[in-house]
Image 1 (tube, rainbow, N blue to C red):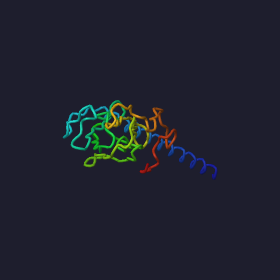
Image 2 (cartoon, helix red, strand yellow):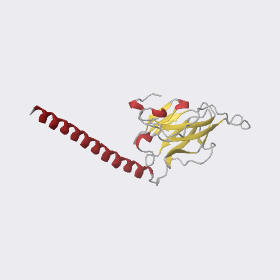
Image 3 (tube, rainbow, N blue to C red):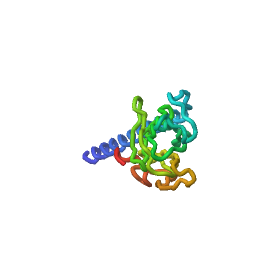
Image 4 (spheres, rainbow, N blue to C red):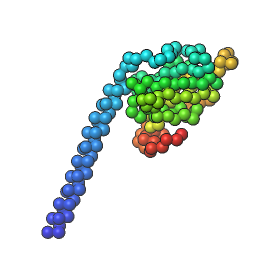
Length: 185
């Protein structure tokens, strides 16, 4: 009698755990499909400030930059920025979705979660070279280049850390994962 009770309890626990795993798998698959659908949407609106393709596009003393996702990577327009001139980066929320909204530009100490009504990232480039952009989970990557306009003949020194294209694992494996809820750099 006692043995039968233990067996029933054991099967109940195993069955419940199995149902939870199946429910989580279904939830994950449904949300992955949504994220993929959103990230492939082409942006059909124009930002208030037209952005060109060169670093010479500044509004007074502010560089206006558009941040968007293209083929699961961050991209910027323009892709070349000027050292020492403040940047106002506007995230295109039609393409920057999911964890990609938690933008990290480590070389400039930037980490910001962009959302409707708060999709502007501001910083001043203090280094030249190729600067990496990543989400806080290190799943999405991109870069832009900073040049020193005061010395146009000098090549841009690469002072920023190289961007890894190695796929990230979960919860910190290979520098990626969930970030374990941390909001600091």
